[in-house]
Image 1 (cartoon, rainbow, N blue to C red):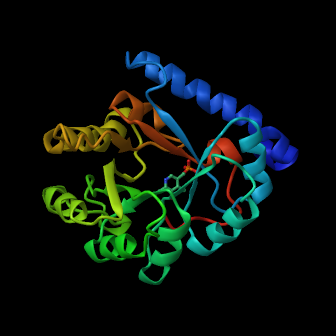
Image 2 (cartoon, helix red, strand yellow):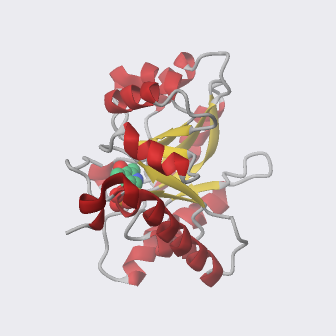
Length: 241
Ligand SMILES: *Cc1c(COP(=O)(O)O)cnc(C)c1O
């Protein structure tokens, strides 16, 4: 069914270039500056060899959803300079120390207690953990996220925490059939960001868009797309989020 299944990690550089080309085309169509959208390669469920293949092709930022799996992979890849790890999964209270210790970014922060723990547990020799607040813009309660009218308070709470650095907002909308309904939650997140941004706190990161909807997200202002399947092929087991 999928090319990657037959050609394995050798296909990763080609897929990476295809995704980069999709990003460039969407950036151009949106008349946004070249290079204004970063690619986060979502490597959850894929082995460290797959990450190495993408790294060798120039990719540096990787996203993981399961703390235990990620910790093992990060240890196996400790020799790779400049690699950047983003935790994009559902945060479990008993995993905050691992996340605070091993990751550079957390997307999907939506709980004030988790925020306090991550800050307390962030090692003082590391820079503050960069975070995006997850927002439930499409009314999708099962996916988690802060309600839009509670985001300002959540940001304010995070700003009192020395171990965190609030960089923006993230959303994970329900899959949509048509382009208009695909773009609506992304537009809502951007408008919310525009309302909440201040000169001291620009909330410059809009973490939105995945394999199937990255064009829609970029047209609505995404600055970081989180792409798994289109880079690494189908996952052998299904992610919970
Ligand atoms: C798995 C995952 C992705 C990547 O999804 P694809 O459809 O494989 O690109 C992006 N964001 C989050 C939060 C995820 O859990």
